[in-house]
Image (tube, rainbow, N blue to C red; front, side, top):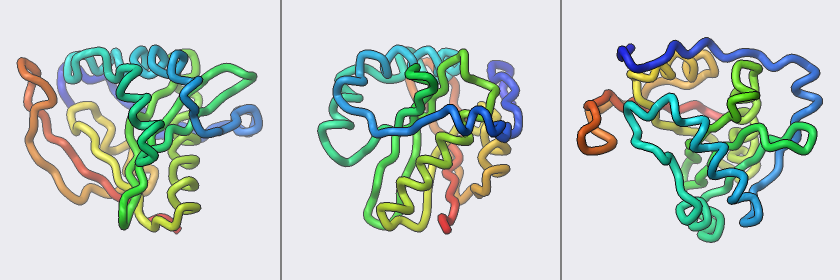
Length: 175
């Protein structure tokens, strides 16, 4: 793991109270003003690798308008707790931009968001979910614990003047 990465724990199983509290829905254009700062705050710990901001309002607006991606929102007590972007491709689905509001981190919400992303893909007829992550962030073991496997790796650089990383592509069969 890189000197910059923080240790990522194994996926935390959400307790029944959290599972009962969280509601999922598709984001709309009206959600952009709340989503952008929450996502960018969640990604600040990766600023050494991905220069902030992680996403802007226009990019998110394009995702929602274009119809090629859906953003699932997790709400708890009417509060935005997290989100994940799901892109349906011809043969599979891809999730990314997984973000949990800092006050909700460490409680198992990310696992619930991934479950919701997988359900969205299954409901759309996809049988495989894919993702990419930087091995240096320590996330490969996290996703492996959720049933994903590394299918490819390549050295890359996300931005000029940032370190080269090993990007892992991971996949999971959806049942």
